Length: 355
Image (tube, rainbow, N blue to C red; front, top):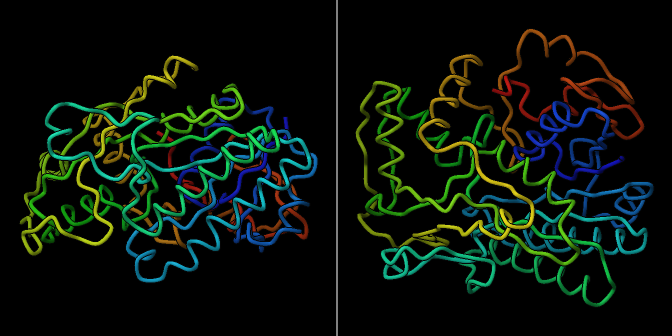
């Protein structure tokens, strides 16, 4: 099988590649990324990349909510127009497409809904609170429309908050780890009572691979159904690290641009259709992540938008000096476009321990 992954230098696609290398070594993985000089906004480039593929996994997106509020145009251009180009190319070539969406499209549960134990299923109202979330809604609606209008073989995954080794330092859990480990005050917006449904990234990428089996046009959440407040996460990190940083509540208000207070997903549909269930809970995941941080010597290294890379290990440094058109990375093969690109660019996805 030949698959194309957009956004290959990002957090999710990087872990997906590691999963495939470990669990599906016979799969040929082709990367499509700005690091390779490619851009989903370039229709011709997208059409050439899709040619000859069996499945396209569309991870590429600008993702940072605050950045989308400050400058929404690039988010619409990349996330919406890039998806349009992929839909057109996959429709033309008869290629399967897996669209990676976001739980941000739902907006927040109301306080009453949250206290009543409600979970956001696939039919929950769409209430985007930021330009980023609006761009993801547009992607989802386009995928559904292209399936119904043109018969495009597309399915949509709506993951709740993914987390794990190698994530962007601007994201909540790696940021909290960094602040606690360095003994710095922890900045929290509001009262720290906002909640998230945390999906371990390796559980998520397993769902991504299984999603190929979903019927065309299907939309599913990837969620645990359990949510934790910001203060609960901080308390667990502090206890794990053994340091107790001061928690600074900013403005003592929950009113913040783009802010979503409560997210808790209903993952029953993907469990019913594919038999997928999350394996990692928050406590075990925090222990695993802390071990990874200690092994790799750093929390994360910030790369481009949406991508954070682990600190290179001695083994990877040898590879970073080479260039190649096709080569071996980790435990499997990744095929990169010609002309050859530096392996250090191609292998930016999370080169630390996969554990």
